[in-house]
Length: 161
Image 1 (spheres, rainbow, N blue to C red):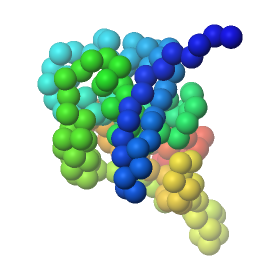
Image 2: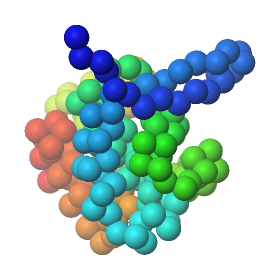
Image 3: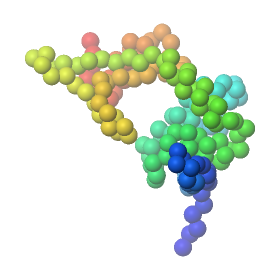
């Protein structure tokens, strides 16, 4: 029987119980190669940009592996430790969270022909309902309307005129 190789993070939850979070080493290697190996040095210097990349990596993990339900900050700790990055994850996460509060979100409200029903989507992880929307990414500038239109089309196969 093969021995599973994994990286782990120990942390205390809100009840002060020590817990151990692990992800298989091979999964961490793949995520690291996909998201961290080829980024510019300047992205490592910019906390907001680095955490956007880590957020994309976390979404990739959720979509493709999701062995366990690991929150974003624990995932960041695992990736940072796995890659021996010299980053204070807690401090970086606070900076990133404050930065994200200022990011604009665009979307649309879609009614049926009778104007009596409206389309809402349910988020996978949270389970809450909202209108179809998309955050305007870090590097999106002038093409906001086209970006939102394409995103709505991509997610719902519905083209906005």
